[in-house]
Structure formats: C-alpha cells, structure tokens
Amino acid sequence: MVKVAHVQLCSCCGCLVSLADTYEKLLDVLNSIELVYCQTLADAREIPECDIALVEGSVCLDDHHSLEVAEEVRKKAKIVVALGACAATGGVTRYCKGNQMSKPVHSSFSPLTEVIKVDLAIPGCPPSPEAIVSVITAALNGDMEYLQPFAEFAELGSEACGCDVISKVVNKSLCMGCGTCASACPTRAIEMLDGRPNILKELCIKCGACSVQCPRIRFPGLIEKIE
Amino acid sequence: MNPFGAYKKVVSARSTLKEVLKKSQDGGIVSTAFIYGLENNLLDGVVVADNAGEFQAVPKVATTPEEVLEAAGTKYTVCPNISVLKSAVREYGCEKIGVVGTPCQVRAIRKLMKYPVGFRHVPDKIALVIGIFCMENFPYNGLKLIVEEHCGVKMEDVVKMDIGKGKFWVYTRWGETKTVKLKETHPYEQIACHVCTDYTAELADISTGSVGSPDGWSTVFIRTAKGEEIFNKMVEDGYLEVKPIEEVKPGLGLVEKLALQKKEKNAKEIEHRKELGLPVPY
Ligand SMILES: Cc1cc2nc3c(=O)[nH]c(=O)nc-3n(C[C@H](O)[C@H](O)[C@H](O)COP(=O)(O)OP(=O)(O)OC[C@H]3O[C@@H](n4cnc5c(N)ncnc54)[C@H](O)[C@@H]3O)c2cc1C
Ligand code: SF4
Ligand code: SF4
Ligand code: SF4
Image (cartoon, rainbow over all chains, first blue to last red; front, side, top):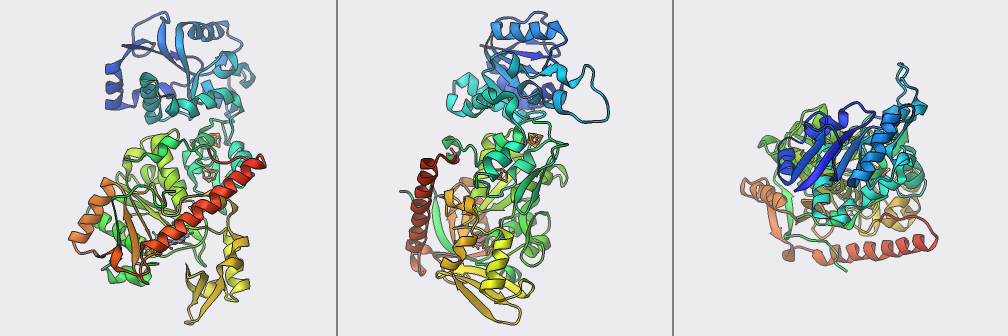
C-alpha cells in the first residue's frame, strides 16, 4: 500500500474539491493507496511518514505554523507534490486582483516551491481531477517519463506565467496557433488575436496551465502512442 | 523514415451527400463524418473552422448539420480550433465532441488528452478526432497578400482556394481561376510550420486530404478503433463511396513523397535551429 497525504496550507479548497472530483477514479486510486492524512476526508491529527504528499496552497510567511507544516511535509514525505497554482507558483494568493483586499497581504504568501524542495508540481487553478489521477497513478507506477514535465514545472516554481507562451513560443516562432493555451486558462486571461495568444495580464494568476499545456514547448514522446 | 505514422487502412473516398459535395473542399469526408455523427447521436457537437467572411477563419462549436455545412471548405489560414474545445463542454454542454484540425492541432488534442492539466472533464468527451493533411499554413495577412497581390483578385470575390500540382489556386465568383506558383507563396508561410514534421495528422482517429486521390475525392487514413468504427458505419449506411487506394490515381505514392519531403526538410530546420541555440519542441 502506498501512503498518501493531502496537506492544506493557505488555499481555497479548490484543489481538494478537484481531488474529490475524480469520482470513481478516486475509488480506483484509493484501492491502491492509503490516504493517511487529509483534514477533510481522514481522521489524523499529525502528518505521518508517507510516500506521497499532495500539498495545496501557499505558505503564509507571517504565520509560523504555515512554515512549520511545510518543513514537516518535506521531512515526512518521500515525494512532495505541489498541488495546483498556489502551491506551485503562488496563484491567486499572490496574484488575484479582485476588489477585496486579501488578508494578510499578497506579499505574505510564498508558493511551496519557494520554501521547500518540491519534486512535482501540477499547474492549474484548480488542477483538473484527471491530471491529479494521472500524476498519482504515474507516481505509483514509477513512470518517470510521464512525470518529467511535472518535475520541470516544480523546478520552474513561481517563474511560470502566461507571458511564457509569448516569450517561449510566440517570440521564438514556434506558435502555430492551435489555441490550446486559451482553452486551458482558468481565468480566461488569454484571447486569440490573429491566431496568436494575447495575455490579459490583469487576469493572469500565473497558474502555469497555458505553458505546460502548449504542445510547442513540450511534446513528450509518449503522447505519440495513441492506441 | 515512416511517412504516415500508424494506421489500420487507407482508402480513397467521397461523400454521397449532394449538399456536402457542393460546399466541401475535396471528397467531403470531414463534413459528412460530422453530419453523420450528429444525425446518429454519435456526436452532439463538433469543433470546426467557420468562414468569418473573406476566408478569415474562426473556430466554432457546431451542433447542427447546417452549421457543419456552413463551415465546410478549407481556409488556408490559422484557425485556433482548440480554443473553443472547453466551451463545447462548458457552454454547449456537449458530451460527445468531434474535432477537426491540422496535424499540429491534432497533436495538441492528444497532448491535452494525456496531460489534461487545464482541461477538467474534457478528455473523456472527445469522441472523434479528424485530422486534415497539411504542408503549411498562412497567417491571414500573408494569405490576403498572396490572393490580392500575386493573383490580383479581391478577397471578397474569392469562392474557393486550393493547393495542388505545385500551385496555389484561387477561384472567383466570376468563374475565373488564378494561380500562383507555390514557390512564390513560401515567404508568407507561418514560420512555426517549419518545425512541423507531420503531414498526414498521424495522431488523428481519421485523417484525410486531397493528395493521392482524383479531384473531388479524398485520401483517408483510418488509424484507430474509434475511427474505424465510425468510418465503417458511414460506409454501411451509404454516406460514403469508397475505392481501394491502389485503384486510383495518382495514388499513395504521391502522399508518401510529400510526407517524406516535409519530414526531411523540417527535420533539417529543427537541426538548424538547434545549432543556432534556438528552442524546438521537445
Ligand atoms: C492550412 C491547410 C493546409 C492543407 N494542406 C493540404 C495538403 O498539403 N495536402 C492535402 O491533401 N490536403 C491539405 N489540406 C486539407 C484539405 O484542404 C481539406 O481540408 C481536406 O481534404 C478535407 O476536405 P473535405 O472535403 O473532406 O472536408 P470538408 O467537408 O470541406 O471540411 C473541411 C473541414 O476542415 C475545417 N477547416 C477548414 N480550414 C481549417 C483550418 N485552417 N484549420 C482547421 N480546420 C479547418 C472546416 O471547418 C471543415 O470542417 C490542408 C488544409 C488546411 C486547412
Ligand atoms: S498552445 Fe498553441 S496557440 Fe498557445 S502558444 Fe502554444 S502553440 Fe501557440
Ligand atoms: S494566462 Fe491563464 S493559464 Fe496562463 S498562467 Fe495566466 S492564468 Fe494561468
Ligand atoms: S504545417 Fe504543421 S504546424 Fe503548420 S499548420 Fe500545418 S500542421 Fe500546423
């Protein structure tokens, strides 16, 4: 049995809803994993030793508990997964621009990737249930080839942004105008103009979904196997 | 070098639907498959490239055969079809979606099916992926320049464009035909096409193009079980006429030649980019 923990830092629960939203797939996964820690779904007070920790949310630098939990997760888990934009890049905790002031202030939040070493990061706000299941399944099977883009995204950390599709794809003459980035964006921060993405920076929360999804940055060979 | 990718069967085919043949680019395979799918409940929405006037292309979710017909025919310009895929699920509530796209767009679809990071509840609703052969594409301004400057035809007067026999063809509503040698159109190509090594949409369920088959017919690769199932049903129900590819002219040899040409030329461009230290998709 593989031991999995779900740990929540400063977040909105959206990633947890996404995790729970895997319906029957979650049951499949649960048959091969033991959910050893999850404040909402399991009855455990302390984070136990585990194989995989899915961590959602960013770390509040003004709250020592938050920092301690982050460090504890790193000690207890073999694989730490930054689940979703807040943990991976800061997401809305850093970049939301609604008309309500966040408390504490935006500058107080650091993505997990800036606080501890994270092995894998799943972009998106929230990440799709399918992506969560795929990552857990690949981790269970030790399918490092599949996980490689998530490992790279973990290293990129808070550097990810909608501008990546401009600087890494459009500006490098690699964009062929498929529109995947626009469709992937959870905040509709991307519109297609003359067959190219245009980033509305007021709306971008730097979740990283667009650039991770773009087939012109990364096209792992295993995608070619279609049947 | 494998020219076509994996496939189960390749044939030459043509629609039997008159209204399709009137509007379609070639044998009308794409529009017929979508109409068949919608009429027989195999699909409840399809993503197509609509003509937004003067051959500008806009992606559209079509839910009726009439809308499919309106979007028939090739627009030789970039049309970000995948950008509306999520709204097909969210706004149109489709559960069985058909998508048509150029080979690069088909690749984008396969990537989002395997790595669905920004596509919650979308991959399981993609019911049919049709790819169209593609050598290169043009930004709209490039296309307009080819038509207006090189062919001397106003965009508003164009009823059809085609690429074949080494030329770019423009047909006007006055019944005129103008051509320009493909060599002269190369400068206006989308540069991103030069790192693309897929000619026949190798990752689609069904891919189709004009090359290889006689005028008005299409060459069709059936690649997956899903593609095979719907294709066979269409033939059984009399929506398509089919001929063995060996019996038509110019035949598969020409498709192979062009597919290999694209692969070799663009593989060189990829190497060249690497030498310059420029990124390539990896
Ligand atoms: C840029 C481009 C280059 C092509 N190059 C070749 C080639 O080198 N050799 C070859 O044999 N065939 C090529 N084709 C394919 C060919 O032009 C026809 O699209 C194909 O044969 C299908 O014809 P049909 O009669 O079956 O489809 P139809 O029934 O006419 O339907 C065509 C479908 O394609 C969609 N479509 C039209 N334009 C675009 C676009 N720009 N992007 C995405 N979808 C679109 C339409 O919405 C429609 O649903 C190219 C197509 C494009 C768009
Ligand atoms: S996803 Fe498609 S449209 Fe967006 S940047 Fe990449 S290639 Fe361009
Ligand atoms: S543009 Fe959209 S998908 Fe890209 S990083 Fe910003 S919010 Fe995320
Ligand atoms: S040549 Fe390749 S990249 Fe260019 S439009 Fe065609 S399939 Fe897309």
